Image 1 (cartoon, rainbow over the protein chains, first blue to last red):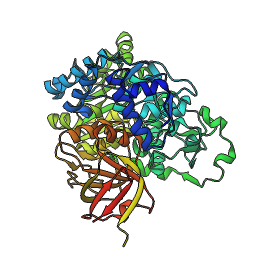
Image 2 (cartoon, rainbow over the protein chains, first blue to last red):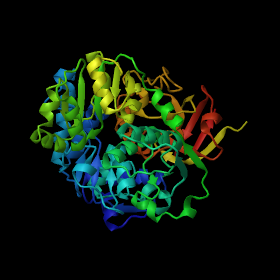
Image 3 (tube, chains in turn blue, orange):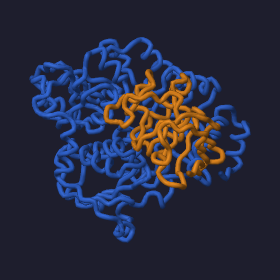
Image 4 (tube, one colour):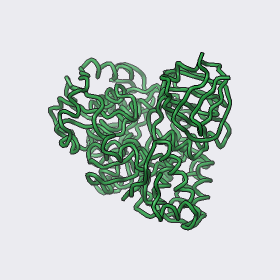
Amino acid sequence: MILNQEEKAMLNGELGEAKKWAIEHQIQVGNFFDAENFVNVSQVHMMVDPESIGEEGVLFLEKIADMNTKVVVPMITDPRGVDLNYYRPLGQTEEMANIDRRTIKACSSMGILMTNTCINYQTIMPPIYGEHVAYGDTGVVIYSNSACGARSNFEGGPSALAAGLTGRTPRYGLHLDEKRLPTKRFVLKDQPKELTDWGILGAVVGKKSGSYWEVPIIEGLKVTPTSDEMKHLGAAMASYGSTPLFHLHGITPEARNIKEEDFNHLEKNKITKSDLDNLKSQFGKKGDKIDVVVFAAPQLSIIEMHKVANLCDNKTFKIPVIVCTSPQVYSDAIRMGFIERIENSGAKVLEGTCFYNQYAREIGEANEWINLLSNSAKIVNILGGYGYQPALANMEDCIKSALAGEII
Amino acid sequence: MKNIFKCHPGIGKEVEGIVLSANDDFSARYDLDRIKGVFSRPQHKLSGQSYIDKILVLNGSKGGVASAWMLYEMYARNVAPKAILFNKANTILAQGAALANLTMCDRFEDGDITSLLKNGDRVIVNPTLGTVTVI
């Protein structure tokens, strides 16, 4: 990679040990992907939940923090793995909570803002068209690239930390114009109607795209999705396909600059009602017993929290219902009375976590939860590997099922 | 039969080991029981198999960013593969390999590496040269 004077100084250790580690890490990654140089980034978002990083990861973070370093651009965090106000009732241990506490301490000392959210594009500072950023969390990246027209690769925790310390990232993948053009073409034959439908559509497109390096363009949409619908569309697509960017023809900002000749040569893949039904049919059926209902992945917006609160009024659930939202939304939801209304039904709202990254296997075993129902196409994809039998239904049916103890 | 396969230069050090291969994708979060060191996702083609000290050969990577930290954590506990070979890696797996100093290569000149290498092959992976040699 071609380095400027500042980057050479970092590499030589003239700007401290932490920046030396960071730029060495970035050069390794940049060389792997044939990056020619670096691009400056304006914001960083890091996934650093305790289940992923473990004892070894937190030791690593503490080692970097002990180098008395600070991040040089605004840097925020993805959901935590432990709600420190509510972890023992879930069967989470002091050891888990302590990893989280140590992570928070190490990150805070480096100037990282503990926003604990995967919906920063709805709550903190959405990126601007063309803005180069280094984001973790696949849902954040795909939304920012696709809905906002910002430019980010998937930056895993270590690389996000490196980007925060150097203020840049190797220029490869989605930082390059040519990697953002459509490579797969999908034509919709059935319109999504509600949140879960958008997630299912994302799952089907992600599965059919099947690689980080494919860029789907979707034609035939007759409605413009809301931010929450885009959120579920993108999060599911990224989950099933490792897809970091999509274009909605005539809708997303970058799609307006894509010429017909840029994708006319691509084979048309129809997405029919049966494609969508087939995906959904893999996740539970009417009458199946359920142990727990989860609303998460991504964290709920204030609009979704309002909807859940309305559905919970005057209800008493037979089985546990867990709702995960960001600290920013949580405080609004307290002020507006949503938390009280939701929890009066027996449900529990967790602040700053997301169910699948909070030791899902261990809390499942501790509570004997196997059959899990959610309206998130993303979470049902993830939790199969954690010992669950996940099922998918829309928000209203999830609530009705929580009252019945089985899928309605 | 050809016994040296060229790939894009990779990450990590030269290693030797036994191949565990499947035409399937990979995520440390979605697919693994990282404590036991086995594939735990029932739908995965390597479900139930141990990946410890293997040269893992898979098509691509899927899912989320967690795999980057997870590779480091697995490697630090010595409950990890010796190397991972992909047809095409995503950014997360390469970033995780860089932190863990785990050997990783992708983009093979001769085509689908999951069919070119067989389960049980003993291979040497040289990421600096970008070669995988069957011995």
